[in-house]
Length: 145
Image (cartoon, rainbow, N blue to C red; front, side):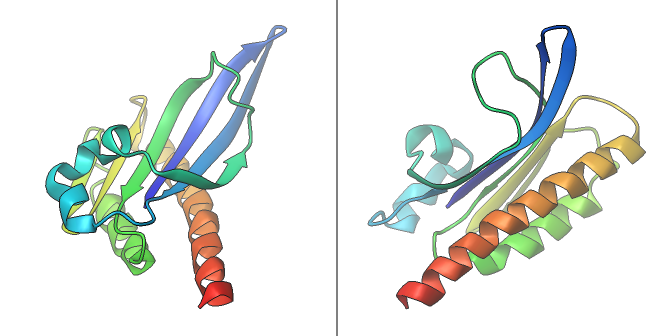
């Protein structure tokens, strides 16, 4: 599972538009031990299938990423999402990017340098979108299981 949530911004007709975009990728049929050998490169090596998306600002090109939260973990381990979020939250005072690797999962939070208060606010907004994607995964399992 690869969850990527980005706060993005774009200049359009003299206006600054902002939004949060999120994507949930699953990797059906792929064995996790092989996938996790270099866990941080998984999204580029094996992006998986996009199963759900949240579009707050259409990704038409030209969007600038202000901050992002990426989670990488086995498709059947959505229970690891909250512990990874908590680990990142505990490190928000550090200079981004914040990389947490706790096998079998990983989390990466990056943002434009700003005050700790703005990083915390951006992080919490991204977390809400991650949780929305997580509920989609859990709902799918309940319907198919």
